[in-house]
Length: 372
Ligand code: DAH
Figure 1 (cartoon, rainbow, N blue to C red):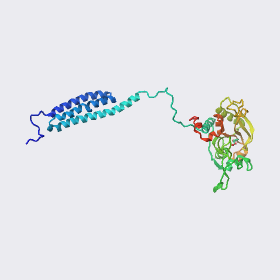
Figure 2: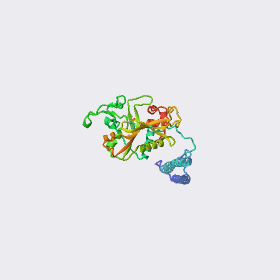
Figure 3: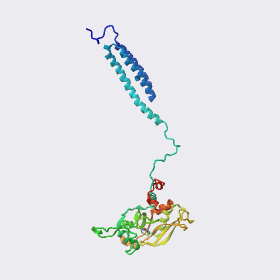
């Protein structure tokens, strides 16, 4: 009995036909593939795919052609067709990958940025707080004048904040109303000593002078605390202290230094002036003013019609201070100055209210630049 799968001698071996047909598809595909591969745009790749693998494509034709192949030859023919389908499929998939790169390349080749378009500033950028901004500007200017920066404690011994600065026990600045005292020190060499939140950055004078030998040229920015709060006072504010100790330092050096930095910050045109004043740790002492930054000296509401704005205090370092730190006041002389950074910022950026600096209002703070 003839097995149904056994080829009959009269039939033309179909695999030969199929392999010819398959070979024809391969040749055609190779030609089309070469053309598309030279410029594999997504459109060209898709057309190639449809032409060969689509429902009416050439590979599909081959598959359908299998129906006409005698059953017993079908497995062999099927293998041939399948191998064509796999090869075409693999080549098309590879081209699809290249098409992705082709899209990217196209994009990269087109100029993407139109510099004439308005800037999208909807992304919030950070800004420096005006006090930070002012501090950075001050530090930069004093660096130019050869000053180094010194840091020191905000919680300090009475000695550094007061007694070494020639502020005696009975001085009103020590009054509980002005000073935040904290619990006295316990244990060690400082046991029982009064401690406080520093009321002024002048404490750094003592720390620096005890740690270093003259000559010294120091600035010390920092936070200070006073038990005081109203329209023009906040319990915490910022000061910057500066001092110079060397042989032969004079009041003229002090004036020149203050004049130089005030002009650097507020502009060459504005005048500066000194008025005699008293601070226990300097002799002689003075306060320094700058011509009103709002009205340039003509008189306005901000300067209360005086044409001048008070900036800070200064003077020649008192011999008692030198004595407290063990410097010889016969050999060395020096000057010191101190002023509020917040106030400097108010004058520089024409702020109407000191409290704006401490409220953290984003709209207000966002107006300031990111860099000093
Ligand atoms: N420490 C003073 C204050 O807080 C400011 C001051 C005045 C500092 C005169 C000085 C100075 O160095 O010489 O009011």
